[in-house]
Length: 143
Ligand SMILES: [Zn+2]
Image (cartoon, rainbow, N blue to C red; front, side):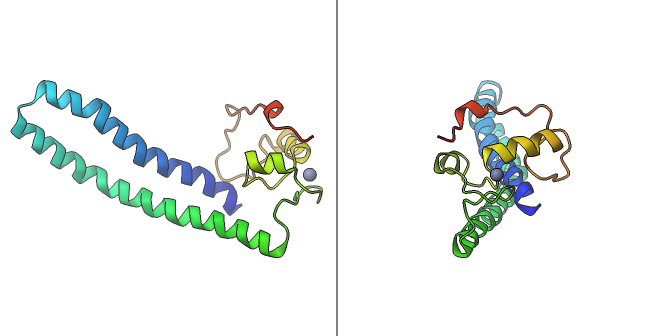
């Protein structure tokens, strides 16, 4: 359960950090240059960073915690000799699939069955609306 929520939280942290920087540089900066005198721009940036940096620090801490958690979970599985073994059928997950989705816990067949039963091959993490998410399994082969 915890692993299924770590990945979305990890990605959300990246979106907050990098998306915020992109917005500031690509949208706010040109708007400030075209509409405000330099002293007012300085006040705008000071206030913007005052509100943005607590989110950045939270995102950085979250990234480190979730990243290390996922990494240590994988290392623990490697140590136990269970990394790359499907939790559904117990068969080895093909290397191509592990290269494409290193955090996967299921082979493509079990992931598909799980997805048909529950709407997602990831365990429920409180997010119930996975209907908009679609993956092309043709891109991930098991030859
Ligand atoms: Zn399986």
